[in-house]
Image 1: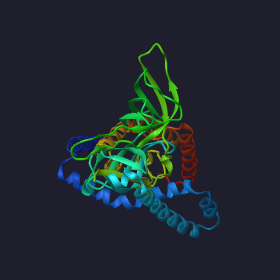
Image 2 (image 1 turned 30 degrees about the vertical axis):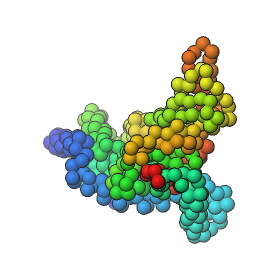
Image 3 (image 1 turned 180 degrees about the vertical axis):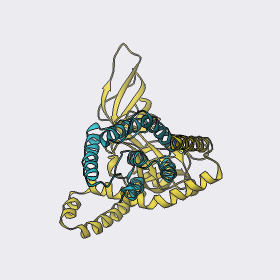
Image 4 (image 1 turned 90 degrees about the vertical axis):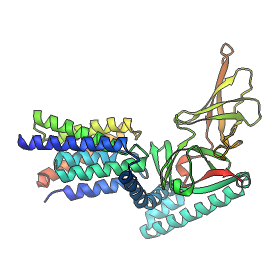
Amino acid sequence: MEDMKKQYILLIVFLIFAVLIFFNNNFAPVRIFSLGIQSIFSNPKAALYSLKSGQLESDQIKQLKNENSDLKKKIIEYESIKRDNEALRSQFETAAADEYKIMPAKIIGFLGTYSAPASFILDQGVQNGIKSGMAVVMQNNLVGKINKVDQLTSQVTLVTDPDFSALAKTSDGKASGIAKGNEDFILLDRVSINDTLSKGILLLSTGDINGQGVGMPPDFVIGKIVSVNRSPSLPLQTAKVQSELNFNRLETVFIITGIK
Amino acid sequence: MTIKPGILLLIIAALFLEGTLVSLPLVFIFSLGLYILYPEEITLIFVFLAGAALDVMRFSTIGITPFVMVVCFIIINFYKRGFELNDYRVILFMLFVSSLIYASIFDYSTEIIVYFAIFGGFALIFSYFTKSELIK
């Protein structure tokens, strides 16, 4: 009985301590702890994550993995570097590289489900000049928006996450509305019934950049319209949009940090 | 011989695996299991720190996971007062239910088949260890 009482007192103390930390996340020791955890876990988690996307990337690697475990490690490392190089090369060849300052970031983790992640954790943070609201892209495709930033890491809300929303327009310029994440697809909402929406048309970001060059750049591909929901009796129409990206295969993404 | 160091190592490994290779609340499951088996001060400190580290990596407000864990521990203690918590099947059932609730609140995968598979595996391991008297 005495032990039980002692146990309860201890649990209450820890509970109060958790509440105090919860309401004082900017308290210096909490920040130091946070920084320490980020530095310890960042690199191993990036390596583990690249292993996951590496597994999905190539059937050949899968086959080789079964044949030889030592060779498997070397191949995954090689493929990871190769993909990074390809991603960097292709990103710097796109128009985005001419107009915007971009910073490569490695994905070190995800939130949400394995097959449909809601957000990524990136290995770039405040110390690298990352700010909340910055757009994250892959070639000409929009990956999402920076939602939270810590000292060494940041969280990007993917275009498919229900928390994501951005002004959008169709590539033919005949319709505009608001793109909202809807778990496994994107919903183009609030489109006037007089606008023309067609299946197969690309949906682009309209652009919303503030004075410091932070925000959503225009003309990045959000996805492709796969179906249109239109009723003549309603003033607005919607469309279902599918992202062109396979989020599971991404290892490196690019943060737009400003305008050149 | 106890399995305590093994569970501690599993929690550390889970910190690396969560959000990279799996989207299951492994830290929560192992922490609850550790506390049920070893309700000691050192367990509380370790689990508290692991929960806070998880919050940092998941961009949650730091303190929320330790808070939820401690609340779960208090509920477990209340349950212990009413009933004897020695049957590993009851422990696994409690872990199963609480981890599903935790997963749905904290944006983890909630595919029930995966949870059945995991806890089925745990049941086999537990039955082996209890027969071998490794769990006291």
